[in-house]
Length: 311
Image (cartoon, rainbow, N blue to C red):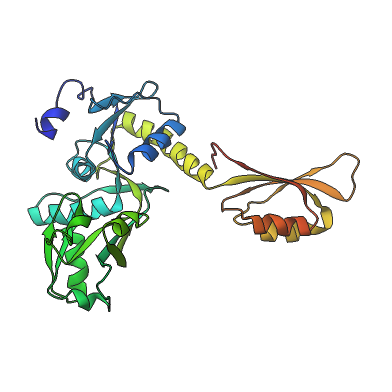
């Protein structure tokens, strides 16, 4: 059964009021995307055997599909939103442009997960002296358009070997001289006798939308959800810091707190020279920073995570 056949059944066509969002069925973005939605208050049950899930508390339908299907579903107006890696989005756009298919979409927001890089890797015994080493070589990849674009910019001729999985085994199998694949930690490369030499593209997850205005009911849902998603992401990156501090050191203390907003100052009962200081920091707080705070006279320093936050 084709994707269009699946998406045109009566369970999906529920009128023009429900916001349709496509997410990766399984893969590196799946768990973080599901956590993001649940943290944003979207209540749903996901069944691995079902393509479609309906939110229980909001007019939202969630489609679980292959990640490389998501850009096309958005660009063909089958769904309203999609969450996909920038690498897949860029590769799909170039493929669709070659095929004469529409590539228009809107970027709703960048997301703070799904970090990875598309990198070149070569056998560990091979010497690397720059991209020119690969002149005339065969490179195995799942991202031929991104790879070709990079080498075209460098005016270097290569041969691409298209593989849809287990790209890292290509050199050992004699299929290619090098590979171009997604890398997160590099552990898989090392296990297959490869070493990473150059990054050609960096990627994060991104929320994209169709290039049309949404129906009013869908737009109302989008207007509700977008601040929630931003709030969840902001909370994930932020910490709530509490401490008791000497009044004469407040400016110095504020200056060393990373990404801190204007602090709240609370008088301490029976203490004229010290106050309680509460502040939200949008950057990571290192032990060294806390030790500096202590040197300035801060005590009872407490750093706690923030679950939800709206600006």
